[in-house]
Image (cartoon, rainbow, N blue to C red):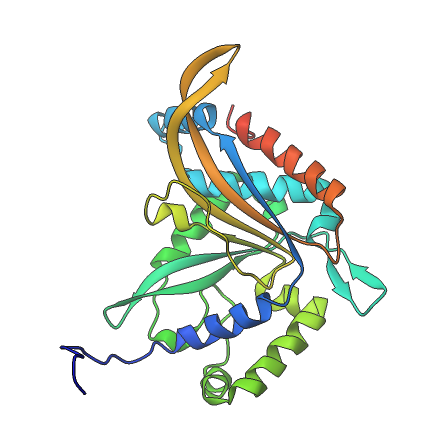
Length: 268
């Protein structure tokens, strides 16, 4: 063909098939989207002080704990609809994160579900994430990190199924609150801002009832005690399932999260 120029053809990563299916299913969810920015100047200072004392906790693990604690106080925000007239509200808060690993020379995002984050300390969450980052993997068909390995044979079959059958499988999982929680938790956190600096918000697509997209931390002027100071602000996008929660309780939950984050919950 003319005017094409040079190009190369690469193998399409198998793991992207599941990502595409999740994206298609997520577009059918009725999520309320909230774009917020939080002043993290004080908690960042407290974290630096803890590192000087050799307390090895990360910003991400602390933020996960803040989110978990806010959800614990407003559990309906991570509820999952069951049929037309019921909602299942779980006591345990299982948070799904993405850990980027290298497989066959390519970086592949793999899901990791941190179970019962409401019962774990910040340091325990931090250690669990580090263990997931170090976990040995053989190929993309490992599919998920952690102890909950999926059956490789079933996953390989899934990848070769036609699109309408894969869509049917996801619909079956999403309609069943117990299957949803068992396979992917109830809260999703994607930390895109930790990969590269983005001065703004990222709008994700998710099948979870509650999803957080963590953006970058940027320095800009803020007002503290009626004075202008240079502060550090974190961009966060939040998706809340509007089929389960109305706007008012969702705002109350996010207000509580704002208080936890800006006051450095669990750090002082």
